[in-house]
Image (cartoon, rainbow, N blue to C red):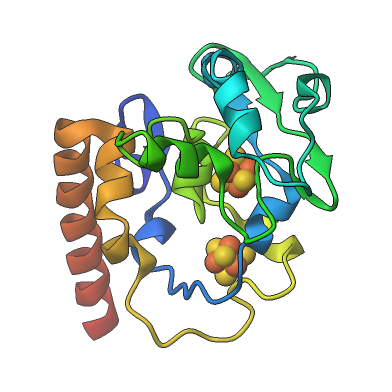
Length: 194
Ligand code: SF4
Ligand code: SF4
């Protein structure tokens, strides 16, 4: 298997994730399109509906019937089904008027880990899983007006996402990812010198 076909936790790893320069500079435009949640995440959110409604502001819908789209089959989701969040007032139903995610706000208010209620694809952006590949969410970045539009001088975003990557891959998966990163970066350095 060549290094470009590395798989971790059954996902192919797109090595572009190691070098993407990405600066996060706007106020949450990435939440203006909603997100696909796993069916299990949808069920968790619905089990918290009363508390979520209490935490919402007047720009968000309190009617749970307008929170989600119909589930659809999607093998990039653990349960095999994706459920998209709906938009309301031009933003994800869970985004408040201050640009904060109500699901994260609620978890923090309850003293839980800030991602306990947050869909994994929200945590991972600008990375994502697409057709069994852990990769960059180019499609979403491209449709946003500010996001990463100017050349970035910052360090690779991978280096700032250790918590997110460990959360997603687990400690052992992250260790393998780091190993692959070192191999990939040093192979590319060698190639640059040739
Ligand atoms: S749209 Fe891009 S720049 Fe804006 S908050 Fe989201 S990730 Fe950051
Ligand atoms: S669930 Fe929260 S983080 Fe995810 S798109 Fe909606 S508001 Fe943004």
